[in-house]
Amino acid sequence: MTPISPTLEKVMDAMEMLEDTLARTTKETTFAPGPLQDLLFELWAVTKDTPAQPDVERWLTLTIERNLFSADEVRDALTTIRDLAHAVPADTH
Image 1: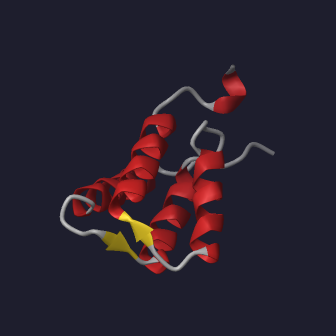
Image 2: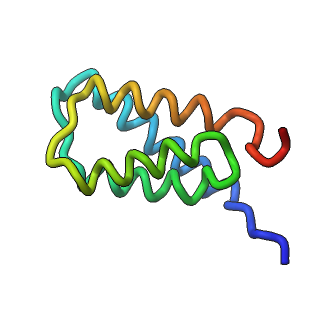
């Protein structure tokens, strides 16, 4: 059975959420794990089979282990995830 790819609308929504959060990192200094988890679960659904998936999963784990994140580390992580999500799917190398 062929895995079902996320719809374009779902991908666009997740990327819009990512960009909105990136913009917030210039205005806020810290982030709680809950809202980051919401975003990361959306990203996880649309980054399957991309080089971004391991980073999304690692950050999901961190949001369970920690209580607070700096804007700088959130910005760095989301920028990396965004860039990797646009890369060639991992299984086509």
